[in-house]
Amino acid sequence: MTAESPRPRTDVDKALLGHATYRSLGEQQLSPAEERFEKGRRTVGLFLAPLVTIVFLALPLGLEPQQQNLAAVLLGVIVLWVTEAVPIPIGGLIGVAVVVFLQVEPADDVLANFGSSTVFTFIGAFILAQAMLKHGLARRFAFRILALPRVGNSTFGVIIAFGAITALLSAFVSNTATVAMLLPTALGILGVIAKLLQERGLVASDFDPLRLRVGAAIMLMLAYGASVGGLLTPVGSPPNLIGRGLIEQATGERISFAAWMGMAVPICLLMFVALAVVLLLINKPEIRRIDGVEDYVARQRAEMGPLSRAEKNTLIAFGITVALWIFPGIVALVAGTDSDFYTAVTDRLDEGMVAVLGASLLYLLPTDWRNREFTLRWSDAADIDWGTIVLFGTGIIFGALLSSTGLAETIGNGVSAGLGLTSIVAITIFAVLLAIVVSETTSNTASAAVVVPIVIPVALAAGVNPFVPAIAATFAASFGFMLPVSTPQNAVVYGSGAVPITTMIRSGFSFDVLGAILIIVILPLMVALLGFGAA
Image (cartoon, rainbow, N blue to C red):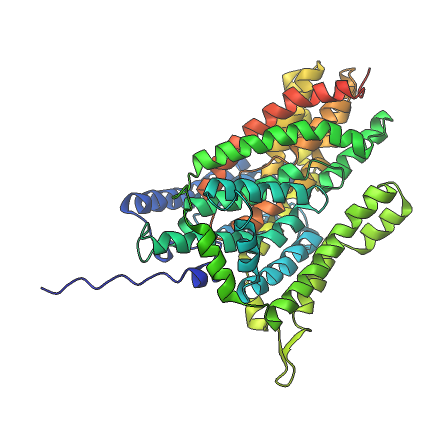
């Protein structure tokens, strides 16, 4: 009788660097119960998605053909996304192809939306992240956070501190850019904790670091913390500027930078507390106390030594990118968002183009000039998570189609008429729920652009001031948490491979509900205190 061969020891760094958004069942380490569940979920999706689409196409709903075709396809795609019957990026591509086959819009018009600036933000940010991971800069940032006083002793402290940093940054830098710049650090923190678990024998020798609950908690705190922090200022997130502009145009009431923060701060603080509590309950870390982490961090930082040439180059590229991302926010604070200078700066420093420029520097800054070796090789860029880029690109396409076909407006007006909304409370609740539902299948920017113009005329038709419902819809547009396509930051952290789709849905649903309640209860009080929305 031969002894069982020892299982191979997981290389944590390799596992985190070579992550994949979608992994087949054979590429994951699952328990028998988990494997049965995953097989069942994916098998159901294969049959349910086409069935839902065909049935919805056949229903006599009285919708325009374009709108009914789009709704049927989108429902089928959502089934594919939730069940992972096929790789999630492929589910989106199938939907785009079927949309064109059904002639919802011509192919060129449909695919033009894939060229969104956000897609290029992903490309540039992912390449920068790849350099930070490859050359160890992400680990340096992670150790710096873990070395903060009274932070590094517990996973709870690390996750909460990291979320607070994310939220504060996203108040002045776009949510997408914030998450993109912090993703490597989040992966670095996960790597440190995974190695501690490995060294102490708290996990199997061949464990999968991408399936740790602590990893899901860190990544979701990164995404959700950015969404919450993005509400703090008018420039924190594109939906804020869209909603503010539409509200000022409709009501004639100007919302200053300070007034916006006055409305947002209580909601953001309460939502952040809820995020920390619920995330740590749903994704309870495998280890709570990180005893001896100070010695471990000090030892690892000493072993890393001074910055290498590749790390310095990465830091230069990263620093230039972050500076250009932050600059419009600084201009907004000094000159205001209504100034010509702010407009000129934001028009030129497009977020996507800044990200691409920063990534390009990694191929211009040499590490060995004699051999013409630069900070990154093209093979490094080829290894980034192109699946997430494809996924969010298809999400942008569906968001644009919801608007251009008029389906979103039809849904909003139909629901409003069916409910017979007449009071400001009812219209506000409707606005919040509609914005969250729409934001689950499109970006938060698209949600604000679609929902706020629906809510304002509904309020005016009911004879109430549209200020509260419209500002509530603007806030709620940033509270779509359940799917990777709901917000760019969700897509970025999903691309880490550390957040299963079922975990994102379960956690996201909790925050959708909590966010809706906080906006409906707190926002009208703050609006009244600040003297806005008087009839």
